[in-house]
Length: 176
Image 1 (cartoon, rainbow, N blue to C red):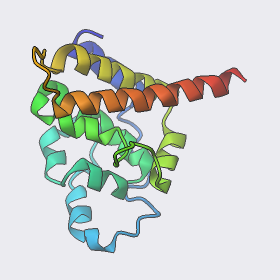
Image 2: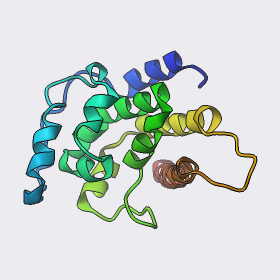
Image 3: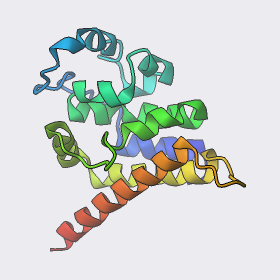
């Protein structure tokens, strides 16, 4: 994966713009206090992910909080725009990286939402996440000449560990 254009073609193959998700908000959502975030998320509804810019997503609040208001399949549908947004403007890299790892120090999927997401995501989509993380590591992380580690480097390492573990367990299950 070397160019943005190649990556975009892979994204379209793994995350097609059609059909749009049938459900938008997560059917198990019980966050009554998130009315404002839910209203803001509606700016994404009914629009293909290819038509939305990273600025549209940033208007709805931090990804760690808002992603679980969406149906997991709907979140996966819109995820490519976060990856492309980070490639276009590395200032949004933390948004894309936070989107693809569970919250918490151990980065373990504990919620029903994450369990459903992991059941929904395809092997091709997991492969794209690996391609994205490789692109990030090669092209977007600053070359450090000191012992200072950036937040983006930490998030990239955590995301790589999370998805590598999932890919290995998925591969082991399919070989049985």
